[in-house]
Image 1 (spheres, rainbow, N blue to C red):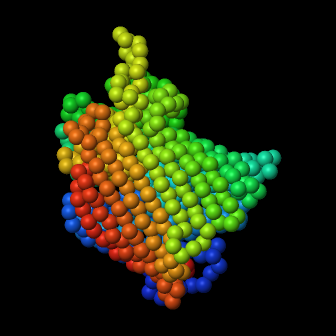
Image 2: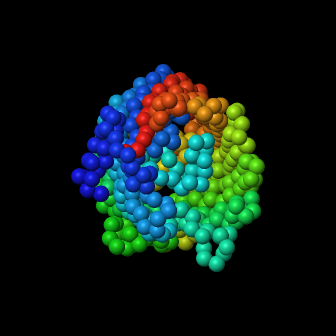
Image 3: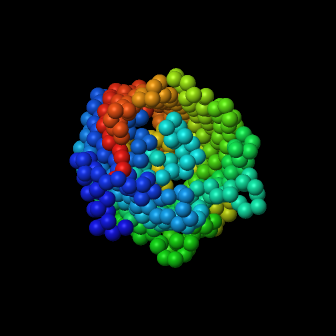
Length: 492
């Protein structure tokens, strides 16, 4: 997408807000959104659920303010060939940066094959975005990573299976964009990385068809990698070390089953080159024509090979049940999740060497890495936000200091009237820190959110959102605050 076209999209949104509109059919229209909002809080931080799971367009800092303008050309799902584009920009006070280029992308689809170039807000779509605490590796907690992504993004029926078997998947390469923030924020007494490259791939299968029989199953795997760039202060040497970016490094990022060459550092020569992680996802859903729906799901996290093939079948993972009720004015959906990540393949680790050719795969240190900045972007985990973000670290270390956790999460929502909707999130987390940096005493935290949205019929496209939230405990501290935002959406 050219700068000229992006400017046209943004200008069109501004014209629409000032009353200059044009009529068009939906498939040929440009969708716009404008939003202004503020968060006011007291205590140590902005409460967790006023900051988390907002694609990184948020802040852990109290008392912030933002303005956001966006315009999108959506793809036409009914045509065999279609294209889309989007631009989403913001300015903010007391965020990690003043200027927030949130989304800028172009995409094209031919039948079921998709190509995306740029930064777009996406997630794995496995858990409910409104109510879940978040997916384990491809959620909606961190800012989008610019990438080139190719694949089948939406489920496509497999020929000859009578619409009872469908697949989707993708391959993507990209680059982290938080160099400016890392250089300004990271403590040089610890390691940190710049110019880190990104690789992701996924494959999902769906069994069944709710239109023919109410039971559906889903099984998928997401594999992510960090590689390339350069690392500061590796092993306390206070020097820059360049990580491999040759063709072999790109291949190993795609197929992380082999160790690196002699030009890599540390355990990368014996284990896997780069930071390699991901998750298995599986679910069963019963959706009755009367309106009832119950879905059971499980996500299994893996770091390197030790849990990829269920070598240590312990009970780490995200367990969830999600239910939808027939239409009523009180509660429309309810979700409960149990997140356990305390084991991490056990407390003992030994990576085989030339002298002792034996391996014990433990101490997985979920999301953290000794060469890269860990599985985070702009200080927010690219994962479930109950794993505490590096932004909370007083010592400014690029490290998730709270990954050995046990958590309970409850969410429910409803639509009391045609103009009002609400949702409530309740989360309790108990943390033991990490194996390498354990807490002297376990820390706990209780976080909650109550959100109300008003979308008046007489003011089409307008929406006001008001939220109250709080944190209580020793993990994130005690905080209480509110968020108010006003948004206008429409077409021109």
